[in-house]
Length: 493
Image (cartoon, rainbow, N blue to C red; front, side):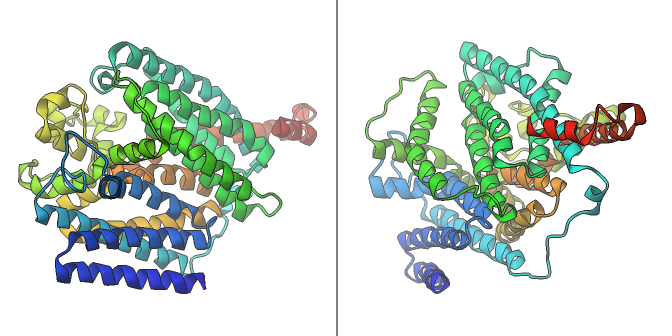
């Protein structure tokens, strides 16, 4: 019955899309966009645990790219700097249509790509053979110890950023901030999430997960003192997704049920209020909150500014530097700017928030921000990016169709990866965390963040630690020290 209703919603959605074109009505087109989004969420709820990643991506898609378009007409939200009916920076009807069509085909082909993998029974979740030779218990011990060790460094780095932000302002973080700690110290801090995801890949019990996940969430709380809200929200989302996926792999415990859903519903307004308060405090303004409806409206309206980037990809296309690939810019920068390449080949390296990066680099965020307001850009302001804007600027509508189809495939593969192995869980969590921010980030940012040199080094350290632990366990002189009972006690601690 639920599928029949969903098919009816999909039929209604596509009908609204074509009707909007026939009658040239932008309101009907926006209705089609919202209906397509609702369809994707409905589809996710049919098998929520398995499709939780797809659900979460559509939620972030709504927050960053659709919410603003809905909040302004429905609530009449007042913005003294913007009188547009939809809250857009554009009054030209053709640009508004272009934005709405881009959003619709993005959601449609995101769904098609996801269904291609989910409905393909030939793609099965098989365990990787590499873990037949390594002890899961050893991986659990080493990764957990590494997480606790690097957690201290991560906390100190965040406190250093918070201190700087409090003294010099949030914007200065992107202009003049330099860590008080040496480079190796910062890199150790960066290993923390990766070590945790490996530990979570060993599928520990709910009780054993409690403290590591609580500490991970505390890192998100600390990032609020820096003024960075995205880490706080992404950390919460990835924990909730992990709970949902453990419902699939763990038949003995219920990880995400009615109690967790009710808790999420009740804490939602509190989180919105908190995130709104941070947006005021980081610019030194007085927190001005009234009713719950006003707070929620303001939050979603302000978060939805990224939708304007799709319009700027169309209207400012001839002002961007020629010959640049913004969709793959993160990968290009990764190969050009890493330590190995810089040592062997003297390739140009452009620092963020500089004229050189805006004019000669491959960062859409830097280029569009500089074009819109050079002065503000050089003083720390940035409009950010959006994967849809980058795809259109590089490849037109074809890029939006193919890019979202690929994203849908990747989102579907994440659940299958989670079922495979420890490495599969690590990949699934890390890629998912990056993809959830894609509506406000670069198209290939998830590849660079996942396969960074720091993450590879983290995996290598855990591997070496497991080999050492395994050798000590079977060494005759140390057999008593590293007996099975000792390891079991370490695991349970």
